[in-house]
Image (cartoon, rainbow, N blue to C red; front, side):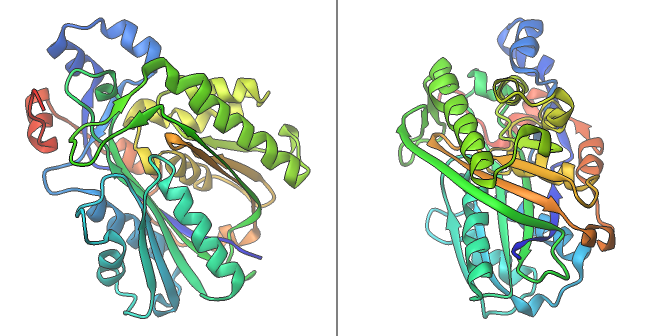
Length: 347
């Protein structure tokens, strides 16, 4: 057996409302809310970045399970907003959370699916027996050009997972895994550019929907399950509409995808997006339930996982839940948001 042993999250307490951004640019806020299904988004504080959030999420994951930290043999960090151009987040995270120095580490980049790519690598290391436990993280402080439609969604957050292969402490068994990759130029950012570019509506059907739905279909086929066998679904959440539409295409009932709508309160956390939905589900899941998680990263690709919840989830210790972080918030105005995010008009 290989699967999730524990998990932890972090979402900044600061928020900016859709109305506040729309007010600055004279946009129709009702139209934006209808199209994106985003009410507000998280904003990283001036002292918060993908590294600090990853540390907090990982510490929360360790609080839940109480394993010997020295037995963690890998830290893989997925992000497209790493702190240094040349110096890894992952090795710093391992040092700060106190796991010693006997671990392998690397930063992973694949747009918004970097976190799930990190999970795949750690699952492989654990299943092969090369490590006893490993940590996989998805974290981002995402960027958007001022005035761009992405500015209403691009936010910040982190999700961290302790992964292992011992039956006695696995809370979510990995039953199947599948990935889809293609050269689909829907979203990109050249070296040294501060903000990304995107192909607007092209990011939908040929990019997000094609990869997410195809990955989910092939994963279910591989695992020999149907939508009726799955209790919860966690998709990548670039906005509120896309995961709901994907669920409709795949014939999932609405109640199985409702946790995806946390995006309306925190925005698109990029590498952490599908993983934060997964943590929200794990906060309430019970033994025997199945969870389908499918990420999406522009460029483009999707990673899919099918988990089965085990009895061990009842023994997890308490830590702050995803909803706790969503509920704890303080609103900022656009000027403060620009200061925190170091936004300069014209860049």
